[in-house]
Image (cartoon, rainbow, N blue to C red):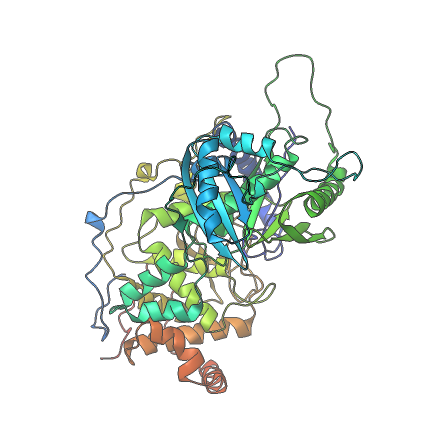
Length: 573
């Protein structure tokens, strides 16, 4: 078996640059983890073969009707089905660039319609040019287009490599006899990335905090077109290496597929080459890099070859940076046509499994993703998020949101170990299956506004020096290290995903949670005013001085040691 994994973004790195190696007391845990990961890798064959508590007081803010969990429709989509759907769409699609002349649009649509039946055409406006994503009804139609695309030049004398791919150009023909008849096609259009001020303006139009949070989520989450472009970009790498790697697949993971991604999110990918593991005779493929000592050398070689191929022969790829001497070798590049920053690396497969767990959490309750979106936006506006390697990352903040939702008196989310337990054992191991088997149904009816205040209250009084968050069990565990904050890795329980958070950064986070809690409950700010509070309502110097003074005061609040938290003094009477 020859298995290769590419791409592990630093914002989702669960066991690499943000994590610490465990002591010997965790050796057995690591053995079990490695065994589970080996089983988990086998499940991808199925993809390759197919394409609280409530507040005890009144909050002087406007809130919408309480969330009724009992009447919420079950519209869950499995992670596997979502991946398969996006893969199938990508294999039916081509990307076309035109000069930007509006008269060319309908001619392009007519040309594509003559080739084969069309499912949809998305139109993307770019500087001086227009881009179109065309999805045909059948993948064979897209393959025919790629095979028949014209390559200019004289291949006998210029020595150029004629690279094939799904990124093409279109120009109008001057011959009226061959020009297809124009048709009036209803192109799909999306606005793309919306600037922050425009998002705030749309949020201001909403009357309640709940509706403001939902608006932020809806306008800033990954769109249908953005998801399609990400899988098309991954397919470009997959098809380029398919002649060498057996049954290769390139799968987006992390924010591109877990449902928590923003329009601005980078593209993280993982490449797997399954090979044929079924013994059918006396012949077998020659192994490459079988020695454990050769593993790292092989990783570097593979990444170097892929980076060279991408730099010279893949359309739209630019600024390729192979970083091969890092502990986790990585390739970074920019795709100018799909407007994505991409990362490729040989890392741990746990990143893909973590994506599925997060996706499943997001599908279990309609409040999970909007709340996480807003709190991450809050963390950015309050200068809590820091670039690697320091401070809190988006991934850590999302973990804190999930853990908080597990710790409510009436939990909204179950432990991740319960989700992982849905996997079947054996060679035919499944990815996470139908979450109905969990027999978990929340009775929590809190609004997003209430949950937001509760989040700030919970983490402003958490005992970080002694306690640690465990998403795997949904319980508070002991902080077994000297780290300022300890969030147990949901997949490898001996690792701390927040080990790089310093004492100063933790204190900043805690005190800004207190400030935000008071801003919502005492000053009656709404969600938009809270996001603007740090940058506009007070100067940075004044706020930093206020925070530093708070840090010097000894907290009189009781620490949460164990059990479900139950704050009775969120607001003073």
